[in-house]
Length: 124
Image (tube, rainbow, N blue to C red; front, side, top):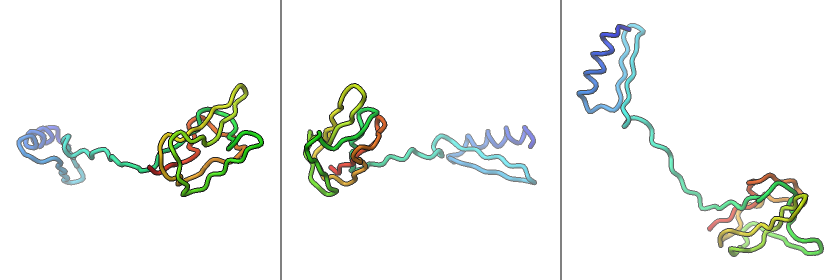
């Protein structure tokens, strides 16, 4: 494509209020976009709050000899103990960060977990 033509098209484009322009002729093409033509980032909200593993280790729902069973749909209060992640040196307590309904349970007794792995999802 002729650089003179590109300069002319670009100069003309600046005099318009267009946000985007495409030109094609004999296999040559040019596409110009202004900042306004760029897609805006998508913002979304989710009513679910993830309860994540605080460390790498083994998930336990309750201490030995105790029974702690959660079911999807169950109401959970902020601060409720939802289990522990046991590492070589210590146990890391998992607590509900918000009040709400327990919607998803990913945690499995005795399963290996990674730091930040979502174990539960609570709907506020």
